[in-house]
Length: 276
Length: 320
Image (cartoon, rainbow over all chains, first blue to last red; front, side, top):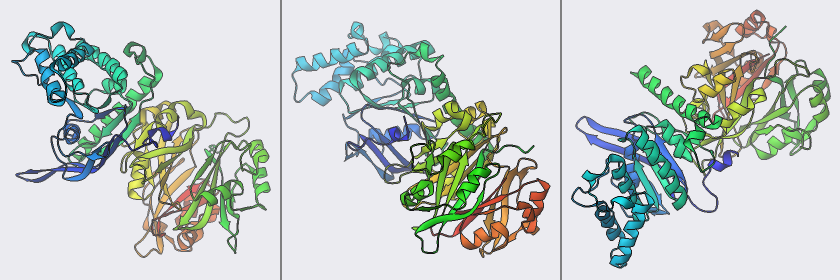
């Protein structure tokens, strides 16, 4: 497949368009340029990861897409509509599960479902949606449990269920598995692969984890170091789906992709040292 | 025995007096003498042959399969072991100044096979901010290196082609496999690619093109290359940097090595903005000839790197 595959689809505009976005934060020592010249398109059904060193503005960029912050320059469009704040068209999964401790798993998901569909659907239908979302992430057995009664991995599953239950156009994930142990993380990555395949979700995910990026992504967007971080390089991952982590571990292409991302991160790291 | 080079033939085709045909301005054929003999009396109209295709399209063209294409010298090219031709039109604005043809390929029965690569990177500003691989010739390195190149998108200022795009000047990198600024270091190391050189190209439209030359120890792209920059008056060239297969990395050199406008091959490129091939590098004026004699170099090719306004931003010198 040639370079053409990396271009936006010609049968319509990209689902998410980030055009010349910059983000400057005021500080006591003057303006801090977090992001500059960010332009990125994400196609419908694509899984895109943002990877880079700490402080490179990955989460800042995700927050801009989620609408939690507003860019100081440039524009973000979702299906050709400018993003001006948070909305149910973007489901967000944070590293911290952010579940309400006094509500059950069912209650946490239902809260989001009610917010989006509450005015137009019956209670029974809202309940159905909630159960379906929990089933999708394998949490049917724990609908009545509260967050403190379940493991970290389970909490994150509920967080994903909550985001998916809103039927967002886009799933935004900020290091969703970063706080989990390696085995749980691997299991959830595999489940996310299945969920994405089953729902054809469009995902923008922030990660530090090279293996996670290669395993999950259609495209890996590598960011330069901050301040004034920007997109340095993008790598198209053509590994066939469904992806099996065990088989991929010995796959020549997988290893190649992985090394390219490590090269980029290593290069950036050494660049910082030289500059320092 | 001299080191075989990845680039084996260079031709400079220039518009004739009335601008209706491209005629051979100068060339380096090296060991491909029969190819040279066939080519000297040829001319190409617009759309004719590889030069005419580049003229018509106003953009670089990579031709990896001569047979069945518009290429007019297939038989003799195959006989000489030439398997890939790259046509680079040199534009000042919309005006075509020349078409440079670069030919690569293994000499018949050559050993080892050519390692190295020439890549054409392209940005379409109306489509995206990405610099994507448009095409490339990978010699014996194809599988490993091409795989990643075809899936990589660079942004301005990142990676070898991205740096050339940003600066508008040639960029040279050594020891690619050791990481540093080169982003495909691991793949490069695997196939023995150890040096990279990228040149921003001029094109007729808005698209941006960068040509990257990736060189392996066994088959360097050329035997020596240099980047020369014009001074503020635009009447003198001073060497910025370079690399010689026999002398290693080259710095700016003594000031006495400066080339005056119109002086020798490089000075003529500065004066005309037209690429030129000097077939007697040892007798080039100033320090160019001295260096060529010291390194036993035979021919020098001068390529202008043009800024958007048509001014010469740099002159690249390739030696054989």
